[in-house]
Length: 159
Ligand SMILES: [Fe+2]
Image (tube, rainbow, N blue to C red; front, side, top):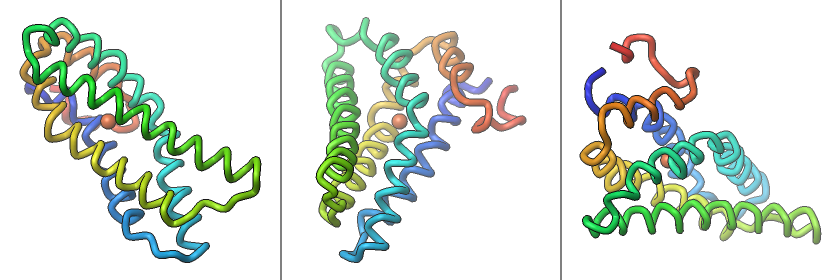
């Protein structure tokens, strides 16, 4: 397989998230729009649990040996961890206030979550993935590809 094609399934999932979050960032203050965009983003995040696990486990484990010698690796690992936690915290905060106190989600919450998701995906594509491509061995990249969901792979890329 061509080097870094192994990251294509994850990138395809990113592409979908960028589209959803770009629209949700522009959400207007209107109940139907707020709930539509909130569901789009939280639904996407829930479907991406497996994607997050690949990043938090396979990618983080493979990069960790370089973090002492390469400051840029230490920096992307920190950012990745902070952003994944922040995304989950914002989503859970919204869902618990919504269910326990019957507080409707606000347009601010939608835009905040959408902006975080958008910035996070841009960070992964522009900063994290280039480092992953340069540091990981072919075998480590293959493992990431194997772990990615079959539904997002293409029949012609495994060559
Ligand atoms: Fe990601």
